[in-house]
Length: 412
View 1 (cartoon, rainbow, N blue to C red):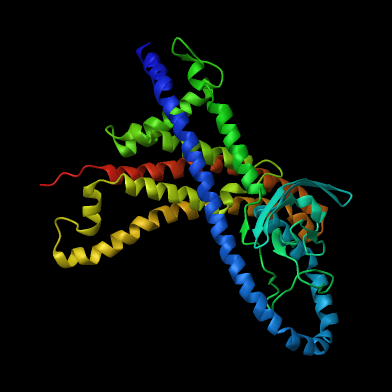
View 2: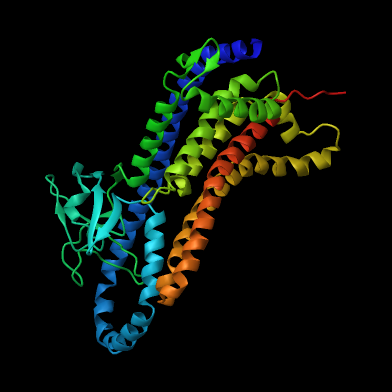
C-alpha cells in the first residue's frame, strides 16, 4: 500500500511536472527541427542561385555539343531500358524514405491517392501559400504554379523550385552536367511536409496518452491507460534515470528522458504503418534530438566535469595538453553518435523491407514471392522490437552522458 501511495504521489506531482516539461521539450524539438531544415534549405538556395548563373553561361556550349550527343541516344536508351526496373525500384525506395510535399497512400489503375499538404515559401516577392495539389502529382517540373505575387513554382523530386523562363525538354527546370536541377529555390521554405505532419501527429498521440493521467488513479491503483503507462514510466525513471544519473539528481532529468523515450518510440511505431513517414530516419530530426542532449548535458555540467576535460587531475602536464583536445572532441562526438545511430538504424530498416518486397519485381517471377513475403514479415517483427530498442538506447545514452556531467568527483 505504501508503494502504491508513493506512486500516486509521484504521478500527482512529477507526472504533472513531466507533462509541462514534455510540452516545452516538444516545442524545442519542433523549433530546432525547423531551424535545421531552414538552414539547409537556405544554403541550397544560395548554391542553386550560383549554379544557375554558371549554367546559363554554359548553355551555348551545350547547344553546340547537342548534335554530337544525339548520335549516342539510341544506344543509351537501349541500355536504360534494360535497367529500367532496377532504377524504378531504387527511386521507389528513395522516395519512400525521403520527405515529401504530399502524403501518398496507394495507386489504383495508375491514379495516385494522396493527401495534399500546404506549401509555404518566401521569395523576394513575399510569401506564397498554396496546396501541393496544384502540381497534379507531377514531380519533374512540367507543371507550373503561378502565385499571386508573380512567382512561378515547380516541383522536382519533392523539392520546390522557381520555374525557368522557358521550357527545356518539356519541363520548366534547368539541369547541370551532373543532371541536378539548377533552378533557384525559395529563400525560405516552411512548408508542412510529410515529416512535419508526422511530427505533429506524434505530439498529438503523446498528449492523448499523458493528458490527465494523474487523475487515472483510484486509491493509488492505476486504471485505464495509466496501467499501461505506469510500468514504462517507472522503467525509465528507475532503470535509466536513477541508475545512470544518481539518486541526487535523477528526478531533475526524468521528464526530459521520458519525453525522449516516448517521442522516439511513438514516431518509430508511426513510421511502421503502411504509408507512414520516415521521421526518425530524417537526419534533421535526429540532429535536433542530439542537439538538445548536447545543450542539456553541457549547461548542467558541474565544474569537475570541465576540469576533467581541460585539465585532467593526477596526470603530468604534457599528458594534460595531449588529452584536452581529445576530450573536447569527445564532447561533440557523443551527441553525433546519438544522431547517426538512430538515423542509420531506422533508415536501414525501411530500405531492407522495401528491398525484400521488390525481389519479386527484380526477378520477375511469382515463385520468389512467398520467400520475399516471409522474409519481409520476419524483418518487420524485428523492426517493431528495434523501434522500442532505439528509443531505449537513445534515452539510456543520454542519461549516461548527463550522469557523467553532473557527477561529483572525489579529489584525494
